[in-house]
Image (cartoon, rainbow, N blue to C red):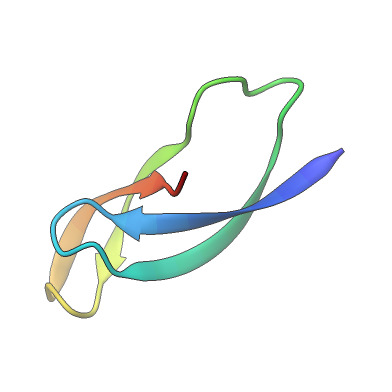
Length: 49
């Protein structure tokens, strides 16, 4: 079953992206480098708790 997750910028804390992941195959939290419009740069986005 795929669950919807929210990705949060690690620099400014803004929630920019919504993504899905399979909790059975990916047990650890997701972290992806994505563009943040508030920081105006590519930053690390981590899965929100």
